Length: 399
Image (tube, rainbow, N blue to C red):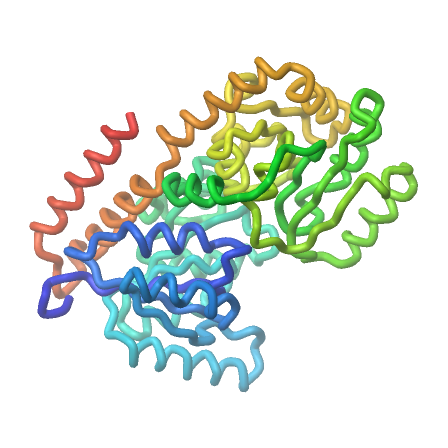
């Protein structure tokens, strides 16, 4: 704690790039975290996006810096680089809490935070698809708290050995004021386009929408599919292009790469489709629901936590191209049904996935971490009560 009795938080992120996660979570925290009770700084692992996002953080009064806090490999050079980065974090501090939005299973950052005397909390954003279970368990032990962004993620954490007492469920929350502003200035008219958002990797199952497209074209021959996202897996990307050629739909599919104009893409599309086999809690669904764009997705646990089938979106069985096509054609053909679906989806986002509610819950988590009996300098009870009241008001407003 500092002389003002505010809790000093350093939020670590892989980059400041607005075209990729966790940009929206980071900006929501920067915008809504209480200045009365917290001093926030942001540390990025890489300098990507700093020229665009840095001035936004400056205007919000949030200090930011770049430090390579996570080694890329186990070489002596990378470990030394990480040690130097930890010193850089310390130089910008001191900090009471280090909150990580980095999405690796590596415990290196947690170890550095604890060695530097900082309490450590991180967001578990996925199902550890590319991580190592044994390494993740080390990260569990080094963490003071773990933020689970969805119920199925919490179950996964417990199954992997995380202490239930450390896990806090805080859903992603979208800043609707900012989203509406971006949508309002997006210069786009609806086109015959089905949108797919997300990095190009096998678990996203883009092949299912490619296989579904011939079914859609039988009734809507002018329809196209736009796939936007970083190519994370090059071999998989080539397989997708080969599949499109084999099915004769290559000319109907546009691979757009990473885009910074997602609001415009949402505005010009007729539906958003996500065929993933595994997700945490996808931001793209919240963005589509906020934009009143019909959503069609795979019937997996992550999607069911956000979308109610037939009420706020349509879900089809995993690996069922014909099922996706039928759902897409339903929202294209029945405008009244699609309008009812999207209106209810927007209401659900406003009620259940607010950025303000997400940040208030994070504030309580920070305060409870500092209020722990094992903390030699417990936080003053006044901000704890004040934040609890704000969190209660946010929940009541949402209801």
